[in-house]
Amino acid sequence: MSYEKELAAAKKAATLAARLCQKVQKALLQSDVQSKSDKSPVTVADYGSQALISFVLERELPSEPFSLVAEEDSGDLHNESGQETLKRITEYVIDTLASEETYDSSSITKEDVIRAIDSGKSEGGSSGRHWVLDPIDGTKGFVRGDQYAIALALLHEGKVVLGVLACPNLPLASIGSNHQHSSSKDAGCLFFATIGEGTYMQALDGSSPTRVYVTATDNPAEASFFESFEAAHSSHGLSSSIAEKLGVKAPPVRIDSQAKYGALSRGDGAIYMRFARKGYREKIWDHAAGSIVVTEAGGMVTDGAGNPLDFSKGRFLDVDSGIIATNQKLMPLLLRAVKESLNEKASSL
Ligand SMILES: Nc1ncnc2c1ncn2[C@@H]1O[C@H](COP(=O)(O)O)[C@@H](O)[C@H]1OP(=O)(O)O
Ligand SMILES: [Mg+2]
Ligand SMILES: [Mg+2]
Ligand SMILES: [Mg+2]
Image 1 (cartoon, rainbow, N blue to C red):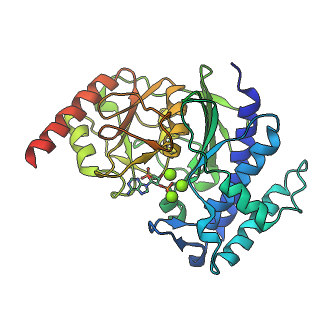
Image 2: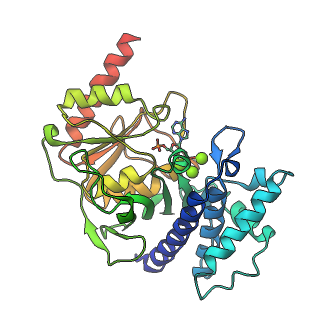
């Protein structure tokens, strides 16, 4: 099956959302950060990105039933203090869509924005088609001025068939541990993958796509690994013990968001490890786009026990002890090291 139309719509939506996020990140004021009940920072850009992507997908694909599983809902925008935020989101959405000549965005109202945000309440599942969206993945990185991603995927019969990752601050050149970080003016990557058709990267501000591949190395001594910047999101202790067992010499590359999957897909490093604290439930929008970007580049993504990720169970992704990604040659070694380290950890408790 071809997903050409869907891919074009997803790339357009993610590119426009990235533009909106970049504008907000530039203008980021402390007052843009609201406190949600779970205390995670939610910004004008989170909501704006979600509304804009929802608008663009619906307009570009009018003949398809539209179901969207997305992270945010408009809850915080209905109270008094949300009104100013909603006004600013609406302005950002109108302003960003105005750059697209085919859209008449001037008539978009605050109510349209609320509706667009709340169209993301779908539960997903194993039948039909569902878009899966993290409007800003890596909110902490976004607020810090570091890495974040707009992550959009399409599920068909419970499987990820398409994924787009826009990474506005990711350098076009490698960010592996052996590379100098280039200046931010050469940043802004768009990764995209369709099932059976490989993974491509292009510059967010437009360039022709190039096909990318995960590293071919089978030698852990020359492999480097990615993990969360935030220690609260993933156990740095566990990943360093695994890396040591494997014989990885390079220090970890710590960056926020699914930009890690993008970097892995083009071979910047060889391994990605994520071990959330006990009790944290992973969500499908945090891995759907990233996982197909890596698998279509020749890599593998599994949970810590080697099971494939199952995106067909609704909004959550239930995993056995973490998520790991690497190439096909290193995966057996990585799985063994994960198992040993988890056993040691369990017996030391
Ligand atoms: N306590 C937590 N443990 C693990 N992941 C978290 C936690 N809180 C938020 N996240 C989510 O983890 C992802 C970022 O992880 P990282 O950048 O470390 O890879 C984001 O999707 C973030 O949500 P959000 O999309 O709201 O930023
Ligand atoms: Mg969040
Ligand atoms: Mg996220
Ligand atoms: Mg998010």
